[in-house]
Image (cartoon, rainbow, N blue to C red; front, side, top):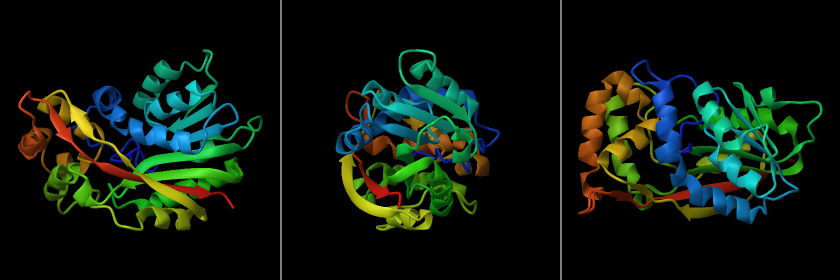
Length: 278
């Protein structure tokens, strides 16, 4: 979010509060929220010319949409995630026994994807969306652990929210921060150098960046609430209060973004950074 948006981070995976149903949330993520990042994935793939010569390692791959897009271009893809509910959906999409060159690994660390018979990866993605949560240090450590699996000069992509004034969803995510106090793990606005800080911690060399419009559009308010909760950005708020209270306040905060036909539309901008393995 990303997620990126998305708390798809290996170090935190599996840490959902007991009031969240992991299987239902994975389904909501796959069916509602994941597609919101489609413009980001497509832009990155086009810029890096993802294709048959690409060997991609997707960290915290979730239900596999970004991997599917790359595999459809001929890339060999490997996804790592510790959450069985998300990986089950990714397997449905990618079918590791089918025609696509895809491998999915359940694990807590990039090292779980190590395979003596696998050539070095040419592209590593971590769509954690830095700035959603104050855990960029953890993400930097995760990327550093992935570097031994990557070829020299391989591209590493991290992504984050753009400036709060360019992200309508930031006003909604402030609900998460308010309800979660004083618990750690709530949303915070993105900082200008978040992505560069992650790259620095991982020992990477920045090699370009860009911004992508990723509007969040939902069929109705209920879908918006389910999609946003599926990101994990409201976990701390749910733990501090309860799912009903979070749903109520989320619904109220979404009111300015409801259209006359009942749909919900929130323009957002995401930023991505391309770094290189030294």
